[in-house]
Image 1 (cartoon, rainbow, N blue to C red):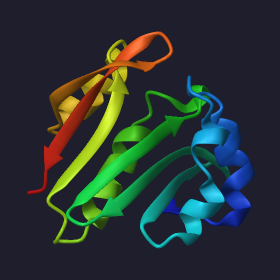
Image 2 (cartoon, rainbow, N blue to C red):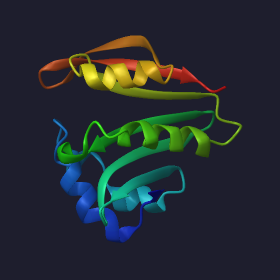
Image 3 (cartoon, rainbow, N blue to C red):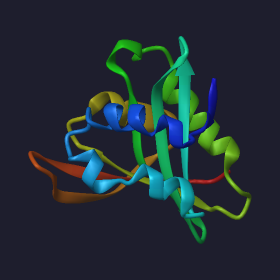
Image 4 (cartoon, rainbow, N blue to C red):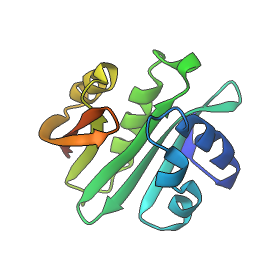
Length: 141
C-alpha cells in the first residue's frame, strides 16, 4: 500500500535513508518536508512496515525527486516502480517535468528511470563521494 507519510513514519524513513551513500539525515529533514507545503513523502507499506519511500519537491512546473529507497530485503518486488507510478499519477496537471539525480554507477536505478522515460540531460562531476551523477529528466505526458 502506498500513502503519504506522517510523523510516525519518520524513524523508519530515516533508517532506510541511512542506506543512501550520502548522509541522509543531514541532507533531508523529513519532518520539514512533511510541513513545508512544497514537498511530498510517499511510503510503501508491506507486512505492516514501511519498506520503501520516495521524497519529492514541487516548485513551479517542476517535480524534483530527492530520494527513492527500498529496503534491500524487499527489492525486486516492483516497489520502486510502484512508488514512481504513484508519484506520476499524483502530479498536478501544471507540472511539466520531473527531474532527479542518480549515481552513474547505479545501474539498477538507471534502468528503472529509463523504463519510465527519464533521459540523461547533464553529468554532474563529483556529485557523490566516489561517483558522478546523471541529471535525468522526464517530461509530463
